[in-house]
Length: 516
Image (cartoon, rainbow, N blue to C red; front, top):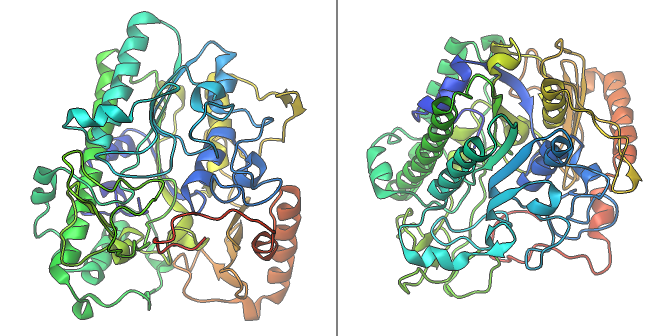
């Protein structure tokens, strides 16, 4: 989900339940995640930078130290920490933190502190027939054949069931819920009635709609007008020049429909808390795991190709067409497509996308409804990062971070509580596949892999359009030193070293257009 997709962040997609978190809580406009899903989840659950936690890239073994694709033994999850303080923990949705999805091991949810688990171990897949669908430690993929299965709705259904069972069977006992939706990740799968409700909504195209989103962001006070330079993505075609417009409009309609189902899920979760008298006693976080995704799935004529997350036939035996085929409208179970260039709209007003360390890849719409736990409301503009979530939970619950875990010494916590006084001069660091960044106060130093460092003043140029590195070489030098000092202590391996590892395991899906 891109920075501006929720309505409260300027999007034209109605998200009333997500927006309610903003109207009853705090809206963080300078909050950062990592450029990709698994590293973000590792950081979210452990409070570490992802390389420290063992997920330097994805859940594939890409090298030593911070790249085994498994959570490290000395990095406890939120659930493992809270368990010692009487909490029951529940996970419904995506896990994606183990390099072994076939045999129960120490990096599956139940072995990492969760008492109940429904969801997928893999990173993504069909919403109608997801791979690695589990209940606790048991594979239940066969259940999708019963018909009427849609993963987003099932995540919601099980999240609600977990909470209701908890309130009934463990009255007065605190709980931690991690409800990890995959929507709106590709493939573009959604309910037909939801898709139809967005017919014509995006006919103006991404250029005009992006400008309208930016104007709403200014009016809402999310971003100051003076910080928004005019960034135009030269890689994305201008809408007037784009081909296959009917197919492209349908792609965004399905994407919006996925978000509608997600928003309905958020509403069901909040309603369950309210019905049980626990809404004001519960702190609710909502955020994305990376910026909008412009990845393209390449068409391939053989639907039966062996891909770990791809199911070649529907439950009724119809072939699934893998790839972005403009002659096939997305949305149904027999398709497997992405919305690609529409990510330019999702990330308004920012530059670049998922996998990059520019703002479009790492800026997330964070909302926190603190309830009675803290008096923090309205727009919060101080910079923050994923590893702040765990310290926030510790501050709210009174739990303490352990000095040792798994028989080893733990790393010091990297973040600060979101309930603490704002710190505008914090140092925040990012690395993914050689795309690097460091933010220090108003300055952000960033680079694409194998390219030169760029420097931006985010107070006057949040959209990263005016590289001022040439006029500030001392700042560049100092920030580069900070970055490499952080990289060494955080087990970040230079990208060129990773690529040279003999026998390195890479992503097996050769038909996908992302960079690994």
